[in-house]
Image (cartoon, rainbow, N blue to C red; front, side, top):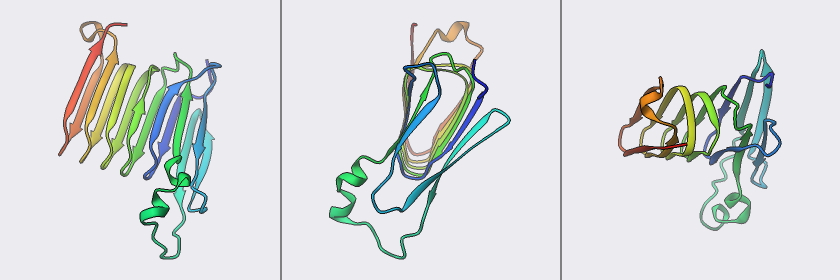
Length: 169
């Protein structure tokens, strides 16, 4: 088991994907736009890994139209890879991008997005799931059986929809 038991990711408008690690280690990839408008601050303290996207104001130059459609911006994303049996705590926040979580096992997950969707695909949550979005949807599948689970769940999609189902493992 890893010395990291908790991970906090603070994103802005970059899509976040949580995937299964291929080597049982925790690692992440991030793709930044070419214009140096973003950088990441990464730290670890007492078993908590923190990754924060720091946005540099670009002196009043707005990215519009063709520039926002350039490959540099299309490829921008943040991918976190976790061992299948991580079972720690994961906390994510974004302002207006989607959060996608794949087939990983988490003890606890807290996810928040103002405008993005929060999507699960065969994700195992053992103890606590707290997910909220203002304008996005919460959808997908959790793995396991809800009847033999002691999972505490709090879901909020103020102006969106919640469509979350269970799939047997």
